[in-house]
Image (tube, rainbow, N blue to C red; front, side, top):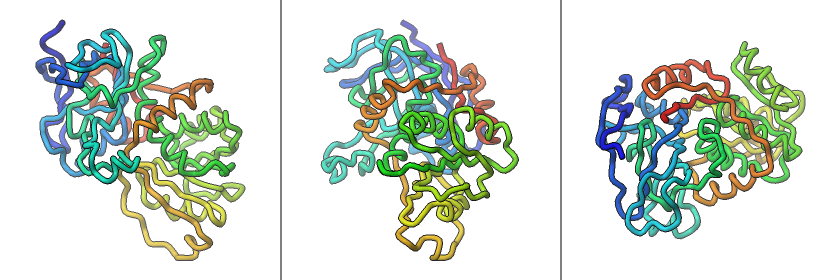
Length: 334
């Protein structure tokens, strides 16, 4: 096996990633070494690279937490995986297992978590190490490039989707990118009406949403033709919160699905009144992953991807910043 690997490394927030050669890491007890086949480029990666989140505790850092690959080596005590098996490595890399949140089925809010591609090296590299307990097995026939966006855009989108409630029939998705285009397909398959909100003037994005089965697609500053039961905001734009509140019915729910959002402007209490709810979503639990992959077993989810070689990671991040992606960007590693 190789002893050196290529990796795109963040040395300082606000500066481009640099292609470097690094030693291939060894898996410790309870860990797996994964040879990375593909890694999605997530909005959170962009926030980290641009310094919009608290600075990573250790730099240099390898970004990437939508990791798909095959197990290359097993650490001591790992029995649930085999060498050669296809797995994915998500954002939640490990938890303490003992804080109040971990012991009350809220491990996504752990007091001492580890995050892939943020507090430990991630998947913008040829190999990545992960805790086996926080990886998910994937079918061997699954295309790794199209599977990569499912690992975060799908998982976090699914956690957001769960919070709209089972009775919500009319759903609004603000920001029709990686997460929204996956969850829209699931919602349509489940018989719900999806209303897509895109950037003003984004005709291509509007057509894309309609192609995926949305019943309406329009500008993010417009009101839908019918009041919504719930809305999920995937775009990191605080001004969309009062816009979504005005779009939902009495008792409606607005879910903020991102890890970062620009400041939310003030709005009249009347827009929140009548028991409307605003809530955020943080990270994910392993149960979210299990239930998401089960939910899409019989749904033909088509992830729309734009691929980049590993060394073009900066170009993928730039495309994401500018809103030029149709679907999701994925780095093809091996």
